[in-house]
Amino acid sequence: MKRLIKKSVFLIIVFVSISFFTSYETYMIEYGVKQQVAKNILLSKSSKEFFIDYKEDEVKKDNSLLSLQGDYVLLKKDIGDFSGKGIYFKGALKNKPKLLSGRFFNESDFNAGKKVAVVQKQFADRLIEKDGKKYYYTNNINYEVIGIIDDDKKEISDDTSAYINLDSLLQKDSFYLKGDYYIDAKENTDKLFTSLKQLYSSKNVDVQEKQPLQTPLSKLLSDQSFRTDTLIKIMIIFILNTVCVTEYWIKSRKNEIGIRRAVGSTKLKISLSIIKELILVSIGSFILGYLIYIIVTYIKEGYIHYYATSVMLSFAISMISALITSIVPIYKANKMEPSEIMR
Image (cartoon, rainbow, N blue to C red; front, side):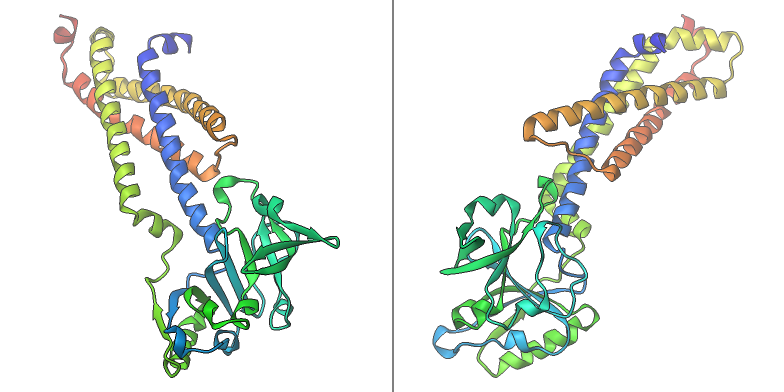
């Protein structure tokens, strides 16, 4: 093993670099997916995003959104300060944010005049304490905090500062009806949204569906800047690997291959030897490169960026890279005659 390390220093440097960059890129993909999941944790893939608009003078206080038939979840984006969301639902929630303390909303919190909120942990220091209770202040209203969302890992936390009960706003003033919403009734979402549009069509209220919700991965991949940047980096990695490994093998191992061919080693044995050595170097370099990646990101951001999926994907890319880049040196080595190599 020492001999392999000593004669493969340059190759190890190349593979460590590949391991580091692929670890970072695969992490960024999984990071993006988990961010999308966190943002839409209360919604299913059947959700619809829409906006409501109207002329101020034509609409009086209206809470028809809260009186739709059946079970559904309704979210209003950007309520108050710090990217809060308004929430209202009928029935039971299948998915809920992970909580550090307290509880999330239940159906009894709505339509009863309650003013309650669930806030992110990083906003806990902004809460108002009164009579042994904590309150979240927004829209000139104090909302009693009934739960705190856990965000122990920065990269998977929702970007919502707080959820407040939407009925406390819609029953207060028509001003709060305007804005962007999500609605989710699972398989009944289309039918419920059609009913919603018909309900408001007679009230001079414009209800328009926005672009359909994409899956977390498809939304990430549809981001042109992310896709272009990632592809360029991957191409550079593979080109660098191919060029460096080819040059390394042909120049530094030329005499060794010639001797082995001269004493009777077959092309197959030489090919398998090259592949074996590349895989061993790749595995060791992957471990070292991943450790460097963890140390660098921890120093930079204060927590460890680790997901099992990204580790496996990064390892697979390293192995595939080693196998693909072995093709050229194997081909060139097998094309050479012993007399030519030893010259």
